[in-house]
Amino acid sequence: MKAVQYREIGGAPQVVTVPDPEAGPGQVLLKVTAAGVCHSDIAVMDMPAEALRFPLPLTLGHEGVGTVAALGAGVTGLAVGDAVAVYGPWGCGACPKCADGKENYCLRAAELGIFPPGLGAPGAMAEYLVVDDPRHLVPLGGLDPVAAVPLTDAGLTPYHAIKRSLPKLVPGAAVVVIGTGGLGHVAIQLLRAMTAVRVIALDVTEEKLALAREVGAHEVVLSDERAAAAVRELTGGTGAQLVLDFVGAPPTVATAGAVAAVEADVTIVGLGGGRLPVGFGSPAYEVSVSAPYWGSRSELAEVLALARTGALEVHVETYAIDDAPLAYERLHAGKINGRAVILPNG
Image 1 (cartoon, rainbow, N blue to C red):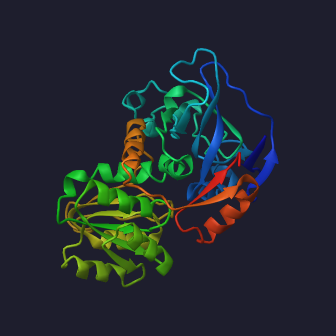
Image 2: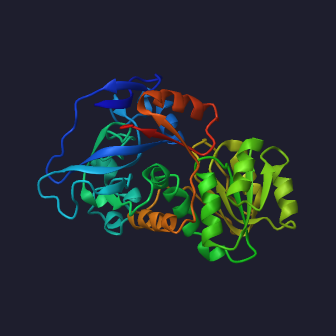
Image 3: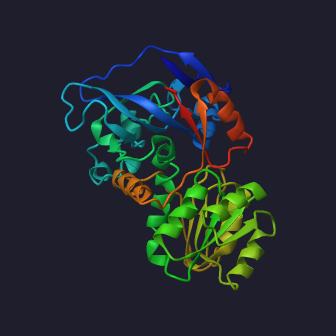
């Protein structure tokens, strides 16, 4: 089968031919319908050799949907042909966090060498994918697989980040979304569907800000050295009750801290390497700063259920598997407006 692999440190992703996988006991074989392209993949490919915790080559793709092609021995509850989404942050299934459905925070994954597909284990950017356990599959329930595949990360991650702050997101509150690309433009729609807050979107290009307006942002601000002052002015000097930073670079993290209101949440989702110092009086009093990771299995089911109501419309660009390297080039250059999706089987 064809697969998109990261094969050597510092190299570009390549389309290669590898043996077809088979489902072992307790596993499920999927024929992949769609696989998402994500900045996290680029972060992995930018790591030095000493930072990688898994061997190469690596088949990319931690966002995946497909149809069940075969069931390993002992698997029940699924049938060949079922359309499913893959829950990516696999865990041990037995520790207290996994027992609560929070496999994204598995306490033993590192110890046991368990990795998500595409981020250590073979990923979905291939014609077929072996899923380690049927509990990591969620029915699509009639959703368009191409539009749904980004929801497994670009939907689940902001949903988790927003959900934990819902008590603060009362009518009249303001939320700042920094970075309105793949995750950010979904976050804006989630905020509009789940709350009655005022959404202020920040990005560095007018094209991305136009997308933010299109999907529901009330205000847009160019993300530069004047952004913090502009947000403060828009909020009457108060600041935002929640700041979601989907870039995470030092300048955006500094902006996030500067626009946070008293008792606000600053949630750093992006992998840009920024850090926000926290001390008495800076940021504002009682600001909570967090860096969450992905979301729980139950939250993925909730995101898909919300999508079925028509509340979410992910902007996607589709590519054949042979064009996956081009998709990564465009993502790295900031030319993807929304989310890129690879179609491994056409």
